[in-house]
Image 1 (tube, rainbow, N blue to C red):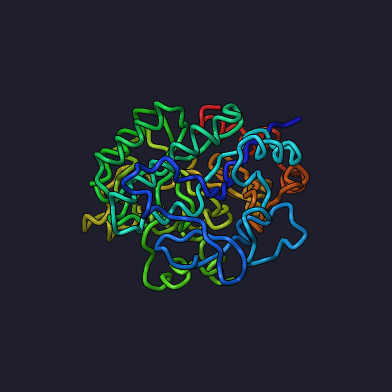
Image 2 (image 1 turned 45 degrees about the vertical axis):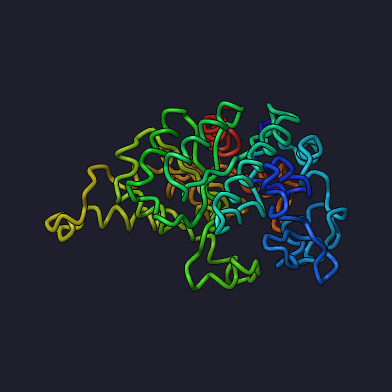
Length: 372
């Protein structure tokens, strides 16, 4: 039976996730509180939670479309307990799960940076020492890196967590300084040297653009925002590629999760066309020597769910490179997750693919990136 590594799953933090915060910050650490709708959610300012559990924790529930209003005791233990998470993987036919954070990402916008760093480190210790450690050969927890607090701070946290057993790390979708800014070069260099991938998840983490502010910062869910976020990788990845990040750091591996892949061929074609554009060549607008699409599947990777168009393009040979950069995922325990039918979905989506391409997408690439 083909091995499946789900390259994009999530936890929902339990009430004790910040218990490791030093005593001086305990009173101000985020807390799980009861919301006006009767559900439980995280409060970062002492007031009622802006959102209570719902779409991000509905796996296993008959009311899988419930937007919010769930209490902590209503959600499956696989949301926050590593052993239970693996038990749910067994029901799903999934061998390994790469796990992204949830509400803890709001530490990126906490104005008190000392408090934010204390909370971030507490989360990181929990996800590696508790959650991942429950079944370490089948769980990959992603500790969060404080990219906005200075490259030295981010590098130190990366080194600390890799020493603890982290196989990769999370970076926010909206850094204060864009990722093509050389200020981040020490982090790229450290990740390359440590041979760990850095992982974005759409627009998770950081201060979004003004147009997105009300939806993301107020933790609202809209159909328009859900659609748009599948294309959220275009801007940061394009600027990183043309900004020479992957030429300066050829061993850097960057993953953008839950963006699917059907959009990639046109994006890659557009980048390559502008790379060859005589105007940009003659004016100095192109400062890289490597063809933009050459980084795809070498430095840049994505995770995919039920992207029928993308899988069709692979099967028909329209853009074979997609098979080199795509990693399958179940998105457990979110509302769009394939659980508990991930293996059936994989078989249907990849029925026309070669065995080599199936292996790359289901486990081969992820096994290499996450040292599995």
